Each structure stands twice: as structure tokens, then as C-alpha cells.
Amino acid sequence: IGLATVSVVAGLAACGHGPMGGSGPEAGMGPGMGMMRHHRGPMSEADAAKFRDRMVERATQQLALDDAQKKKLVTLMDKMHQQRLAMAGPAGKDGVRPNPREQFQGLIAGERFDRSKAQALVDEKTATLKSAGPELIAAAGDFYDSLKPEQQAKVRDFLNKGPGRGMGRGWRQG
Image (tube, rainbow, N blue to C red; front, side, top):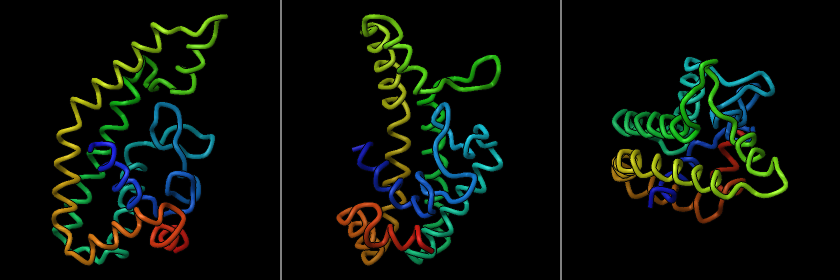
């Protein structure tokens, strides 16, 4: 349920031109699963907030959200951002969060796949999902349930067609 909810909202949020719904330098995901500027490192919290606000504005336009619905979407986007940061893991002494690619590379650094390290990584990510899941699900439910039937239909249509088609394509193009 949590993953489906995140997929719905991520689809709604994917309203830019880049790989993760952004356009220009803020597009994409970087080390530690935080948004990144192409090859220039993770976004600052201020830049992440600007990016979120732009996504919310585009979703607001596409779905004709009222102020109360928009506020619920902002809450949901904030919960998603917190979840992404939590999934990446705590920042090290240098302030940088673990890089998922490097974590995986660590599993195959030797002659044998490090199964115990892989299981520990899965256990850590699962525990993070389970602990934050109820808040994320509640925020997604609050947002979706606040939508009018025609707005919900647009969301369902987007999911039925998939990213890059239908409503999602229009969001990325404009």
C-alpha cells in the first residue's frame, strides 16, 4: 500500500522534463537518494523546497487544486522528502549521505557477493519504510481523499496510462 501510494504521488510530482520530474540543473537523483544538480552534488534544503514548490504548482494547475488540497499535497511532498532522506541513511561526519550505488558496489567488491551485508542493508531499509510508512500513508490518504471525483479520475487516468503518456506527458511538456 505504501509503495503504491508513493507511486501515485511520485507520478503526480513528476511534472518537469528531467529523469525525476525536474528540468534543468535540479533534475535527477544523486548520492544518498537526495535530489541533485547534474554532477554538482546534492541540493540544499532551500533548493529542494523550491523544487517541491514548483512540482506542487504544476500539480495544482493540472488538477485545479484548491488551497486546502494544495496544503495537503505540500505535506505529502514533505513526508516523501523526509522518507527519501531516511532511506538514504544518516549523513556521515562530512555531511554526505551514503551513495546507494557505492553501497551496492561494496556488496560485489570481492570475489563473492556479500550476502550478510546485503541482508543488513535490506533490513535497514525495511525498518525505515515500516517506521515512516504510516505517516506517509496518512498524508497520501489525506491528499487523495480531499480530491473531488474528477480530480481523482485524472490521477487514476495518469496511473493507468503510465508516465510519459496522458496527463504525465503534458506535465513534463509544459
